[in-house]
Image (tube, rainbow, N blue to C red):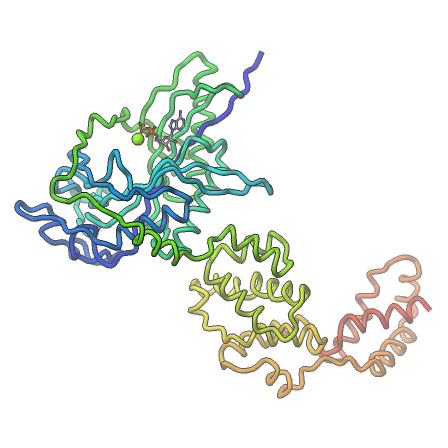
Length: 482
Ligand code: ADP
Ligand code: MG
């Protein structure tokens, strides 16, 4: 009998927070600055220095906690996590241990139209370590710019059951961080990091198997691939009579596999103890309520509202809310529409999802950096809706309207681009063409309906693309069916 297995996954996500200065000193947190230019005595752990807590670190952590339905601890403290590594100048990391600032929350994910809650065990504050650079052709180099950059670690419950769910969970995390404006969420730059804890057990079992923890996952795709690899490796190991051992493994992206790194440390190895240089935090309800009142609408809620309010498909709404700026852009365009109805809302959505997103990726920038004047898309949509221009012409005038900050209606007028909806002219052309092409008409009558395209094409050519394609098609069919 073959046993079916089920995977159990818990993710630990680290996010660098977008504060200007470090967690406990005034050095800049700017990414990509010259190595070791953002350091100071606190960052370097020089004797006699004392940390001063950055209030933004606390505010941002609470924000994330509230956005993920966590409880917020009014009174909590920092702890030292001791370990020796060259990029950790103090010999310990300031973190939190038994009293994380946020706990007991959840996020909602969606997979194949099904919603599922993934529990959040805790969110705690900590500082980043420096960076060891091993891959240059010299000895290891150390850059302390990153040392002391504020982080939150978000620990999920072991409630994720597949690599796809893990991917959705991470996507939600990143979107929430971006909506809150507290992290760049950039995985390639290391601003978002994810360790995946993976185990397998016989399907339906309630006893979890032994887990491994996979590190070095620097993209969403790698998280997915590493989890799949780990699940398959563990099942194979068990099936061949072996046993999974609890260890930390490394993802090797070049070989698409996980490799043993070290046996897992336990909390005891870190000799956690309360940080004596920082006082306990006392968060008033007022402080927390104030942050709560400033929370924006979150991506998933916004998606459902879009479906409801604009009657657009869930797919569209999902694409639009992925980027807060894009969603804002969409809503703003809808707001400025001449005629507000489900048809125009969908037209705006089509335009944003194709033309605007194409521009964004071609220019590799953000939506606001594209500088698309507010009126452009609403005007284009009303030109299309009224049958004044075809989609093709609309796409042609779009870049010009942006570049010259010019009204699409004005461009259409000035260039005489208005569609010919003059049924008399179209009628005349269609009649003439049908008469002149008896062979094509024969083919049509024999069932080759594609012939319609030939006639429509000819008329579009004669009218320099300005004829209303729908009217042309209808007229051509009228004569062909005669
Ligand atoms: P550790 O003591 O190794 O730090 P924790 O209990 O703190 O383990 O959990 C760390 C992460 O591992 C959490 O995200 C948790 O959900 C996940 N996890 C715990 N047990 C398992 C398991 N058996 N399989 C997969 N993930 C697990
Ligand atoms: Mg733990």
